[in-house]
Image (cartoon, rainbow, N blue to C red; front, side, top):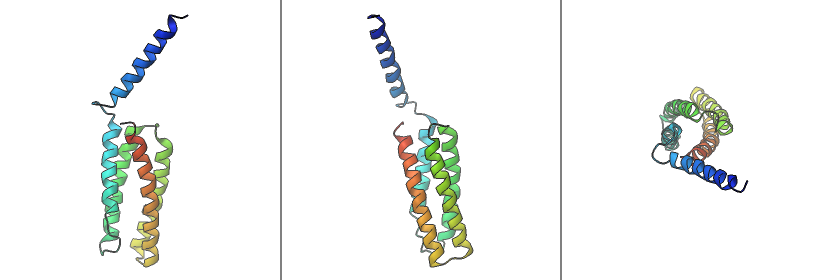
Length: 135
């Protein structure tokens, strides 16, 4: 039994070492897709919601984010399902508030859109951070 423990520990160490190395040169696909998502979110964050084309820019930015998020979901599989669920819910709220602001642009609807976008930003940053920690 004394011989099996060191062998078992060596195998475990090799497996752990290999999984850590696996994130070096040959990063999982989710690492690239989350980088795209991060860029799209940064672009959305830079939109001045007080500008005349803000609502249109927000719609376009959210559309890009939806595409990028879809790729992250495909690449991440079920590993990040709880974070993806939170992002999905906050994305839906943000999209609805932007649609409301488009239908009836006012201080109230733009403020609601800003608040929903802030909540979305928090959820998506958590997802990005959690995924990047594995890359």
